[in-house]
Length: 482
Image 1 (tube, rainbow, N blue to C red):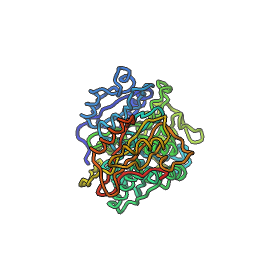
Image 2 (image 1 turned 180 degrees about the horizontal axis):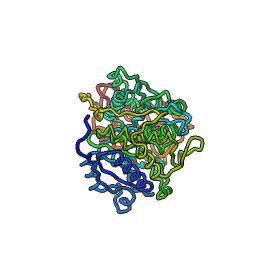
Image 3 (image 1 turned 90 degrees about the horizontal axis):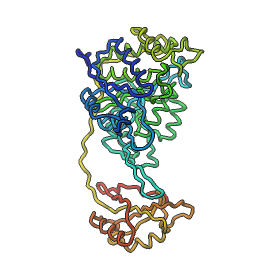
Image 4 (image 1 turned 120 degrees about the horizontal axis):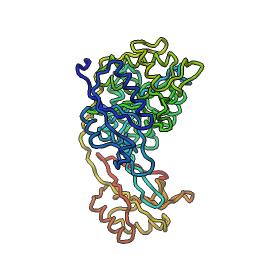
């Protein structure tokens, strides 16, 4: 990819708290390094929230991001209390920024870490999973959050991880899931991972259950290379990985979609440090390096990154990573930026220097699949009742089943009828499963008629969930205790 001959349009938000200081430092370094940027500045965050916009970003700001396709964002402060949406989630979903890429590298011995050989890249799915944000209170005692995992969403992020590994000379891609428990949602992620890994014979595929995988990552991060995860796991473990590498304050990230990309530090706005010229600008600076590589300014990306490495190596450190044993000077935000500028054109002696090649931004596509034959086998009907036992509910519902049959009743996923355990904690939230007779199917009309009979008898559903087969295979879990 050739170097742009005209400045690259970039939308920039200075953010809240320490955001304006670290953005000023970052843009100063980019300018001195010769980055060719046409900057559009927008206002986001706390002031926009307080002006009455619950998403923290105006329509004009959204249009700027859409117009430039590149967004360099400083951290923001979200006001306390309800009604305010996560601006990061809003931007990621609005622009389809499905891939979150977080390099987590150790800089030993200049930044303290127990894992001097760590060099891990976390690739996190960014749009679905529990972060779909679909939550409901269904009864006095029970709330729910829906975990949505799609095959296209899995395929995009997993293929991106393998393409990233190929483009950056990585040897292994590891997936983390909890598919021993969430057999359908996390199971789909694992299934697609196995399918896609076959397309990349030069890259070693690996899968870990999330709990032991997280323990292994914390204990032996050197065993990992590229890690790909669903949204929630990726959010948590990317911060863990950054911290055990040395500091969350040093980590930048890219959020990439098909038309737009956002670059940011992974840390927050730290309002108690605002205005003191002490904040470490490294996370945002390294995010800006990712941005430069993304837009094709590879020479400037390498220039800034190597100067940053040399600064760290020379012991010029902000307070958060300062250590008298290895640091030569404690500097503030501006002082650190000035030190990086002074070292433009230099390369580190002990830390590994970086080279940015002329690769194009990674693009992936989703493989179309023919629709399966879908048939309905029954329905789960959820009820809110505090006054009845499982046996009493079953006694009332069995005569209402019509062409279906009452198969079981569960409470918080644990079967309590028939043959429930007396030790099970019972809430006011019941799942009543009705199935069609063996070998037959049901219809939406029959399900509606069932609900009508239940309502007539005072059993009003709070939620229903269809039970389907796809190409003849039942596509729902049985549940615990069955």
